[in-house]
Length: 324
Image 1 (cartoon, one colour):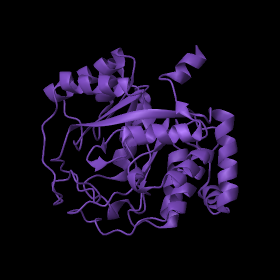
Image 2 (cartoon, one colour):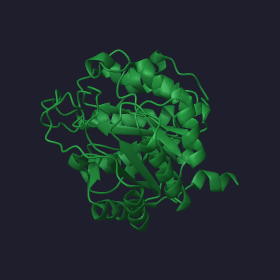
Image 3 (tube, one colour):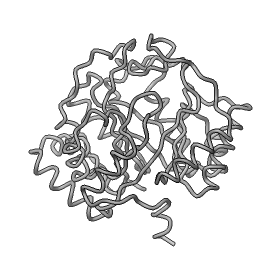
Image 4 (cartoon, helix red, strand yellow):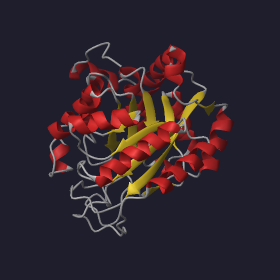
């Protein structure tokens, strides 16, 4: 999705600071102009390689720099991953996302196996997404050839606050990987994490960067920090829920065609707040008991909520089908 309008930081700041209900009303209008407001994309996320990551992300239980009680696991076998994908499909998920705790992709048998997983997921009619850390242009091309739908690589926060969160890679490293993904013809799944200790200005800056990526992200995950014991951010104060809603609404207005995805942290958010988030333009959720290593609402609870709201799961590859 190409950038239809260049937004200045002043534009984004003014939008962000509008009265919340006015903002949600505008976001709901934008959402309905570009999407079926009764549909929700259902996604499943599986950790295919857990722990042992050499990055020092302050929020992450999988970093070797942190002392979170997490058992390190080796890369899963392809057949086991595809069995999980089939189970997710039978449960109604249309996108299957696979995450490996790698700082960057290394060529070799492990990456070959991930490409086989991508092909297997794609062949069963699901959208395939991976998050593997930084990757080169050649690696992005290989993933595209395997049938990858989207590559997740979050910016996490603003460029200004980034060094307070991570020191082992730069903001530009992340932008370079997103560039490689775009040139390979793969959609970007790119968002951030709220509640890292950032300021309002940092949230505005993150949204400004996201909406000016070219092409804009196809999917924008809005995560709430899940504090994990043993990480530097274990004692962070929870972000006010209205700030979460505000970011979702602004993301919808700035990136009207994107899937705005409610990701980590949803387990502690009331169904009423989630309904307001859907009203503000969120139209994708992760379903299943776990997001990599953090708890997530049970599938039955998600489907019950959608039923209460009169919503239904979105079909896979819907955009491509409508364009045909």
